[in-house]
Length: 114
Length: 114
Image: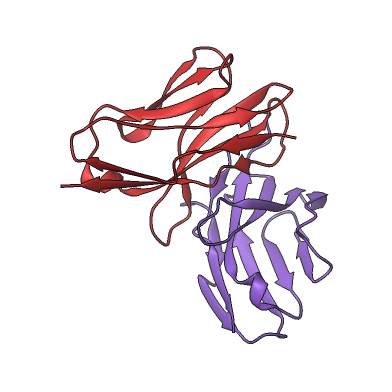
């Protein structure tokens, strides 16, 4: 296992369309995080899973956003009815159980909404 | 809630010169502190972390950082930079002893010049 992977790396879509991103964490990691990074800013937390349970969601995660981790392994992030303001880099990270929370990040999915 | 301030959005420096990237945090409880580096079109890579113990932390690629509780700072330093250090650097904080989200600063662009 070489690290966290994300698919696709780039996505261009038209406003109003739905998009789905996938994240595969490091295999022994049971915690998985989603972040969003806009140009010139640091990553902002969206949501977090421990195994299949979604334990925390940011207020940034509007009703159009939904994330799942059905079997406690990979996760998907879906954005419905995309808006131009959704254009950003979506980053996934994973970590082991433990209280020091060292998160390992994937390469990200860059979303462009036209 | 925790917050991170990176006062310098850009730091230009000549190759082989020393550099310091500044990070100040705000929190009413104990925190863990991290520095991540992001190369163009890539995810974030952990440079170093402070969890407890010695306030001087050494990381990868010759970087080090010093935790100063009284000044609520965690500045990143390197005694001699290389052209390959050109990247975006992010300071991040999380609650100590939890699996909480990372809160990032806005980043500092280190530009190493020949």
